[in-house]
Image 1 (cartoon, rainbow, N blue to C red):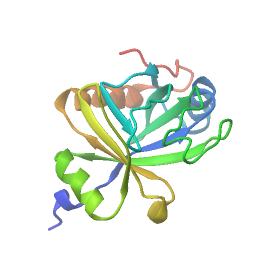
Image 2 (spheres, rainbow, N blue to C red):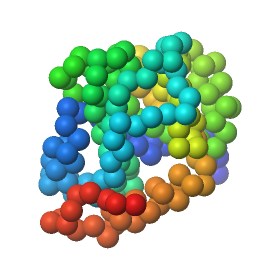
Image 3 (tube, helix red, strand yellow):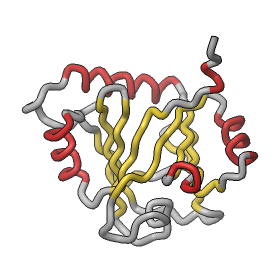
Image 4 (cartoon, rainbow, N blue to C red):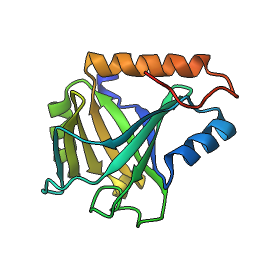
Length: 175
């Protein structure tokens, strides 16, 4: 029997975009993704990027496509960030995959022991998250994301909204 603790399936694909609303519209029309919930000019409780506390001004949109969460990120400034590590201002594209972990500190140490650089670590909305520079393996960053009950409930609500959502309805989700 397979031990699910040793498997780390992706629950999210994330893209750096120049315009959240345009991306939401395009993905909704092309793939049937959505509805999306936006978090404008998101702020964290604790943050570090490559050993600094410099936090970029970013907005997010989250929605589902089947069982996969799709995240769009729009950076509003030129502050150094994990997004600017891959893309210059005006560029956009695939940025990271994310895995959901129950033992955040254990997984954080495992990633470091594998030799990956902790490019960014944060705590926001009662959740720990860290981004490791795994581009040498998968061409993108890998996010590890904690799984506290409140966030899992919010995501279940979003996923159910996706299951019920129909083309032609608003691509935006109000929670």
